[in-house]
Image 1 (cartoon, rainbow, N blue to C red):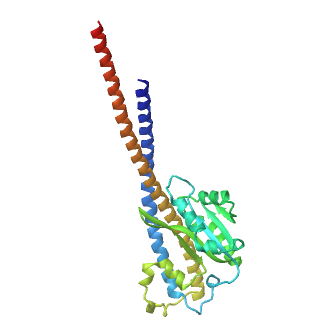
Image 2 (image 1 turned 90 degrees about the vertical axis):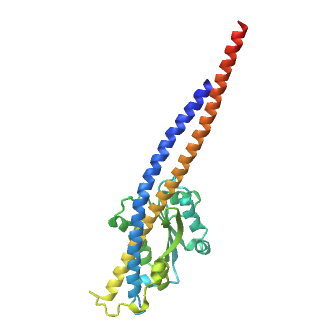
Image 3 (image 1 turned 180 degrees about the vertical axis):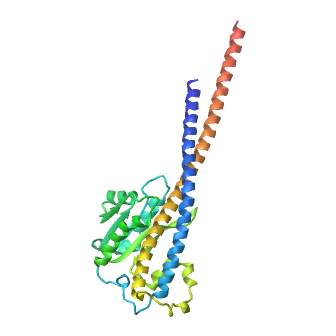
Length: 295
């Protein structure tokens, strides 16, 4: 009987755990859909901005964001989540950066690393990788004004000419089951960078539709500078929403697997419980028959 009680307690404990994982799965699904919509809409917004920037880029425009520098360091920005229970997402992000040819081919003294998210900072700290700056606890209801603190710090390295390139490592959310880490070049801007960020939409932009007859106020240079800042800000927000969409998608799948595993354990333990119970009943019947025969 003691073993039966023990099995019943295990079944009850697993059922309680299943309720928790199921609730976490539903919450993750709801938030994943929310950030998925935000990520897709922000991506379209960034594509439109990059398209407008592509239409206005020409050799006559001089901007600090177009400088191709030969000296300076390479600034890597690694984006991960603050929480776990989201499958291999954070591990894939970290591996994508530290196993990339860009990271390996850059001398240690020429690297600058900025981490966004608790997991990336903990990995760098445990592996004794120098972190130039760390940002933690970005709110999920991220607003435009919340991004200025991070973006301004990134642009400080560029404006001071301390770095020659800014590379962002963030997930690219494709659908609920498909998302993959990607290295995105934020600065310097170039035609190639614009097209790599635009993807298939960039290929559909007709080159003959350059805005040759556009009127600019106060000047074309000022408009282009504003477009640069808007694109940087939009790419940052896009990466944040894609990270959150990927995080909750991974968490949804992880909690779904945990719920399925709990169901399997409950079925196995129930079967074991029924077998043990049947053995106890059989033993009791045998004892009763033996006792009656003895009498």
